[in-house]
Length: 315
Image (cartoon, rainbow, N blue to C red; front, side, top):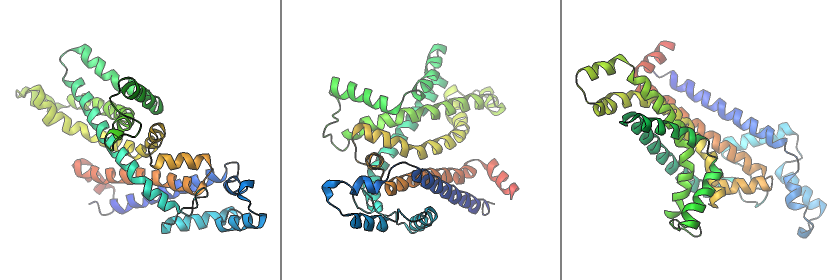
């Protein structure tokens, strides 16, 4: 039933990646300034005009834009992202060294965000007093409005400088993750909790829930065994979208906490207009976003048989 659906979704994912690559290339080409001039026309380097011209030729920056686009695209297809203008290091080497740190931060932040979201949604649905439910339902709106960089600075000031609970200068491997993960998780938990809470409310109105309640099932049984199972499905899509966006959030978080990772090399690339690095980072973020959402789209029909029937009927 899904044999036609999978290739179609794979094709759509590749188109999205191509559009992301093209948009990033066009926007980076439109940036004012010249990274080669910034890096190599420094009088302290003592390079002659001929040497600078050779460097420009090696990077292909004087080629027609269409030629640069085709050359860059062909390199990306082969997994060759070129060389950093600032350091001369292959971009794939920079990405390979920085990505594991960012991946650990993003994965830990996502897990904590999901736990926070489920805790907020569960407590707001099972709280005995109306004022507690109202207060808990307002928490996601508060989390959404909190900027990541501001939250990181507040956490550093509170838990590191004032209370001294968590070190931010030369911390251990685990200790160094506590505040960045919390900074990354709080804004991500908010929309997940909002969608989950709304889904729980909608599932509670379904006839099958009233039937289960009429049979004498306890509120906790109804919530855990009947409501959450159905309410989680819409939340899965939102979680997939947000996990794809975690790379962007990790860039800001790593900059605030001075962590090595994709955020650090992105900050340096922006400061020096290092176009090959920026192009690779954009495509990396787009790839993460597309792959996570592709996985969600492929898993969703397995979790909800109604969608599997719809996919089969649409073929």
